[in-house]
Amino acid sequence: MTDLRDRILKIQGELANGALSPDLARESLVRLTALIGNVQELERKADHEYKLVLLGCMSGGEPANRAKIRAEVSEQYVRWREWKDLSILMIEMVRTCKKYMQSLEEEMRMTPR
Image (tube, rainbow, N blue to C red; front, side, top):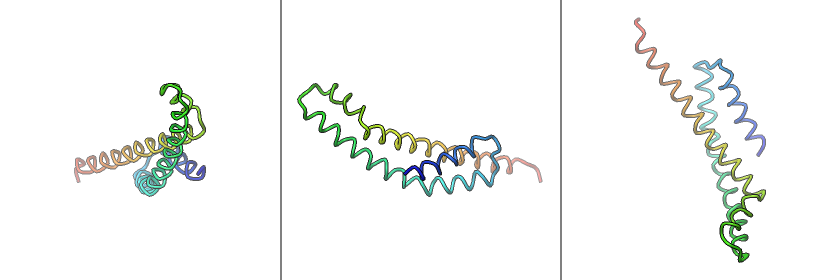
């Protein structure tokens, strides 16, 4: 799991260093779209594990808001949030790469030949 996370964070670092080239944007877009399904699958699994913890906390007879707080301090909740946040980050990086590629295409269209 950390290997996947490390690969994504490496792509983020490459995009964030300020030296974005068309080739790097294209390569990053391909790699991110290839990995997004893996992250979403892990997010679904982590969500399911968290929901089982939440269900267990809610069946304890305490008020729902306290049961939810108890579940949100669990390891399963933390794992789910990490994958959810990573999934959101990937979607935003894909959007950024696509926007960058669109702006390059527009720039090339507007450049006289």
